[in-house]
Length: 128
Image (cartoon, rainbow, N blue to C red):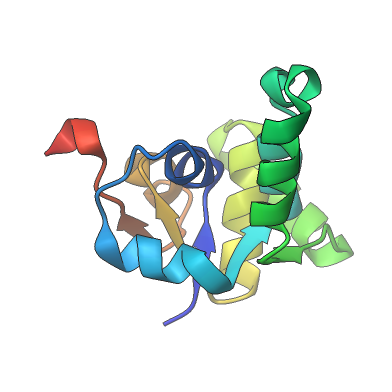
């Protein structure tokens, strides 16, 4: 099974907030994300202040396969937003996953399940 990692999981993992061993193995080498996840993750204002942390984040995200916005993803995103009135980032991630037959690894499974995307929940330290 192939996975697309949601932004919240990337952030939680980078900050050491996950307890999921399978996720840790997956994110150590090569993983898949949407371009919106790259933008949201690297756009965190703390990275603009802390250059060392920003460089760590860039090195981490360098291991990702990034799915760009294609015309098909844009069209699917528009349909999802029209039908479900969802946030644009979630619609882009869902559309990317659906069109590439990927399962979204997320802490917010309900947000993606309602859009029709397959999901897998991640275990957070606070959930244990």
